[in-house]
Length: 268
Image (cartoon, rainbow, N blue to C red; front, side, top):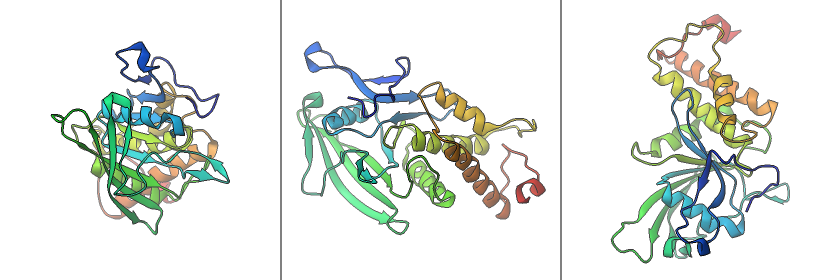
């Protein structure tokens, strides 16, 4: 049920599947709720599904009312499987899983952007035995240009963050973010998104010269899931991406009340 033997969710924050009958199987899925961040953003951080856990993955999406999935890994990297393809291969081949009496996933549309580095899929999920519950739309943002254990292009990642945000409805459940293990790239993405949200929404300037929202966010993430932001390079990339956005704000004349930064320190 877990892709890696040393990447297991904390019991206090793990997502539990609804299993009304013991015969339905375990409530376990390798995914964690991420809450209580300085920015108040919430996520589900998940491993990339294995072939035999795809049904559990989609049950989690349905039960948690997730409308946006961000996938930060390729299916295979350097000859090793990183994530099973859990979406239908084409528009004419919906996939049904036994979960919830029949959970049907259908591919409605697929488009490529950012020089083929990002794939946006529009999916529909529905209950085959419940005609009274309308289908739900789930957006699948698949970013292909982020090597494992490393950073990526900050401007491109910021674009993926913006895309995922634009698709997230206020009434939706937590955004689901995953790579392969659901720690390194997943934690880095969540950190960047959460810190930018904090800087955008804060009502008082961050006057404390020792305040570090990146470090505070990473520390908060790690209370909910192991190895979030797994490597030093990924940690540094969080700062690089946040700095990139701050410079964009300054160069465009946009003032954000949530931060006070000396221009000479940014440009040095």
